[in-house]
Image (cartoon, rainbow, N blue to C red; front, side, top):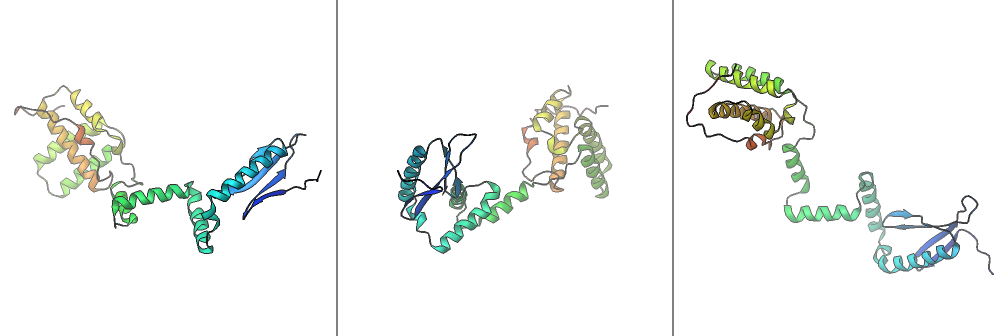
Length: 238
């Protein structure tokens, strides 16, 4: 019987797979080594016969299904390797990147994908500095005073914004519309008073969006119900 020298090679056309002898803990072990879809494969088998059987099957499969890949021009191969270099750090397979790009292109038409990304990021900033509600309230009031707003208007703002700042003592980006709605309902006040407070909250969120403390499409206030007030009296809470 012919002695096998390792590593040995199973080959079909330009496709080849090497088989290595890799004994472990006193037991025989044989490892295949080949590349598929840009990734290195190293399956291990307990006997040479099983390793050889798998190598024959893989060589046959690669030779038939990857024939086009094996005939890549040098320019195509360079493009493939460059694509892998770009995508590997993000863990994105080439086919996934191609599918996502094709989907985006079919929806955007001739609009460059980078333009769509820039448009999205302008409305969904990834680095919004957290701002406490009380700090945004203070900034809004200072701005309105500097703009020469009437004392009556400022009085209403100070009252309503003071209630907001007291109820939501955290980052304005974390204030949910459902929380505001629950807070207003729990006050036990007239519908008009609740609507006035809702309006004050709307002013606060609008100011925060203008200062880029919130994304432009922030719409939490929309989930706060507007009450039918029947022209009731405004209540000023202590």
